[in-house]
Length: 90
Image (cartoon, rainbow, N blue to C red; front, side):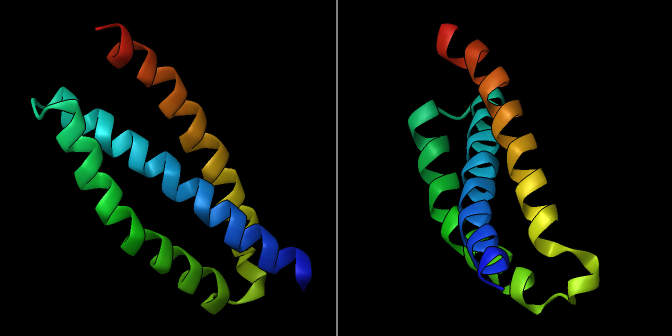
């Protein structure tokens, strides 16, 4: 049980960070200044984190929400790291 709680809380935080970074990069690519795009996605990230945590604890264990959250966090953080190189160097 403790592993599930920790993986949902920490994985949800990492997943929120990855989605926030991807959203900021996407909005910057769409023409919004980088500071504004990161500010907007950071504000929306608070709502996203709450939603991820509620889903993680509310989903039945047979769907393995903690594993899904952690795997998604790794994928989004990796993709954000790859895409941010183009934004920083541009």
